[in-house]
Image (cartoon, rainbow, N blue to C red; front, top):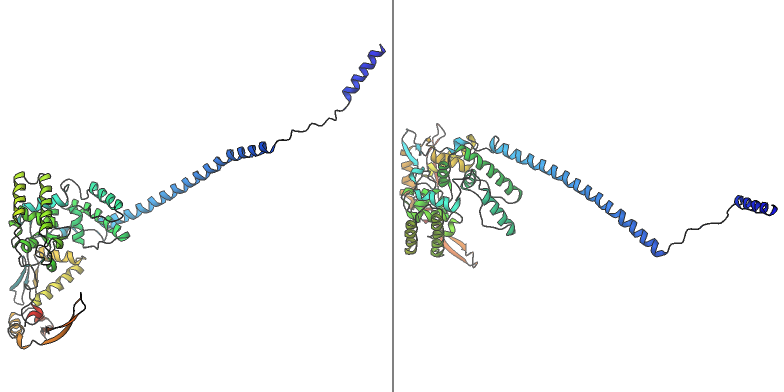
Length: 444
């Protein structure tokens, strides 16, 4: 019994005895520590990256919204000014009456009429050859009869070409309506921000013009305003071009002649057949054949007309230079009166010089002057009839621009005269030069 009791006492002692044994964590190797650190970094990095990406996307979105609001505001302001504001086109100015303007003397007698003798003659569609409409639509704006002022397919094509050619491209995206707006407003063809603004205004105005005028009216006005070369003669419109290049009226122009006039719009002076320095025949023929081919492709002419036209081109286009310069047609007095009327129209109608000229040439104004034909007759006797006694020839030194060589030439000194009525202060007669008007220093 005693032995067993001793065993129980020992068990109890062992049970109450405190275990002072210390357990230490196993020491990890350097590789394990490094691996754990790298794992932790990998787990935390993506979270930081995602948060930065989200922030960047939010900033971009806000900037995009702000930019859209700003651009929308700018476009809205442009549209407003082009339709209702100070940039809006006046329908009354676009609606040409096709009536000649007349000048009257002090007694109410007609002394001059602005008509076909001018560099810009305004004529109606009925006075134009139908080949003009077919040729210009074919080469300038083949979807003219379908679009509403802007051909977006062509516009995007021009934009892509512009981008792919590093900002240089001869591919035009403007429709006939847009060209009409440009020719009518006479705004400068600027680059950069100013150029972009002009283009936006042109697009908005083109839509407005399509709402104001019919397609026939748009084409009619366009054909009256378009610049068509003529060297120093500054030819505008198909009537004056017809006279300059073929010495005939617009309604008498043939298919080939219309194709030529329509084809030179991109660079009119480059295709001038009367340029004595360079033979343009080959270039001209190629351009005319291009227009004829496009007319055939679009069904504007028949195969028979096309074949006849090509044969005519190969045989040689018959150009005949006609007189179009207005300098010899209006007297010095009336030139001054015309310039004053244009200035008055620009102020009263709040329009550009070109718009004022269009109004003057096509709206049938009656302009009354203080011109006295009897006094003018006396002025002409002295300045024209007896001009030689006033001439003074002097030796003038000139410099050859190419060689720099100096040489002497005879030059005629000029003179002018103005007669004013002392009672009224009105100019009643005058002359701006000796001899026949327009001949200048060549009168010797």
